[in-house]
Image (cartoon, rainbow, N blue to C red; front, side, top):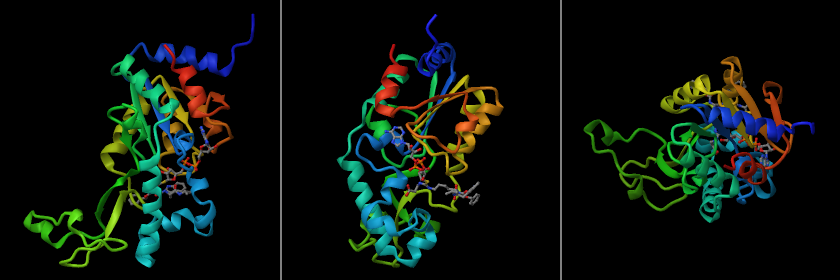
Length: 255
Ligand code: BV8
């Protein structure tokens, strides 16, 4: 009897999970989009930006210290997202979701829109959306219910409000900022209720997102990791598939 590979074992777990509503939760990180040409967070620190600590750039302090530099970093990453296409891994997840309505909850740390562009719906975006803007400070007009639109801002680096000088920032969650409560709670409920948590392309270095794997394990779910490299949450998982998102997910999620 040939030995079951990790992929075979996880496919069997998937078949079981697909048998009930909310049976599958999926948590993705930057590795999910690497084969779409979007550098992972660590890789984003290559070349020009390798002199900066990501938490420094992706933080309110970092922005207030040098708004133009941080805006430039996001402008480059935005262009990278706009130029990218979903890969076979994104498509396999969206296809599975369509074939098994109500079974899968897709949770992402990624600020790109590739899951959505692949056709996935109801994606829980823990860390925001790099293609959206908001004001760095509350708009003084908000009390009177007519908050200024960031689209009216002067086209500077970063754009600023012509009326009060308020600066525009990307609508992402910076280090030290709390996650959108609704998203985190929904993600926690999804991992509490799933039979299988599939963790794809994350180093597991950033919290509270990484804590979702620990929570799933505590709740009795099977935890399986897809990552070509070891990660900081390997010890929480039952199964480790050493491969890439675009190679492994189509095989794993095939009908
Ligand atoms: C908060 C948006 C408090 C912005 C991001 C507990 C312990 C320790 C620290 C903390 C803790 N709790 C909180 C902290 C502090 C901090 C934190 O976690 N620090 C870390 C660095 C130690 N967390 C926070 O600050 C969070 N906020 O705690 O607020 C609070 C609470 C109440 C009230 C007020 C405040 C906010 C965290 C969110 C920060 N924002 N993104 C932006 O993108 O610019 S995080 C950002 O980095 C990403 O979203 C992602 O989450 C993270 C990067 O991690 P990965 O996605 O895993 O990517 P990485 O590059 O690391 O790894 C890639 C992986 O893919 C690798 O493993 C690689 O092997 C693999 N791979 C590569 N290619 C492929 C592949 N896998 C598959 N296929 C491939 N082809």
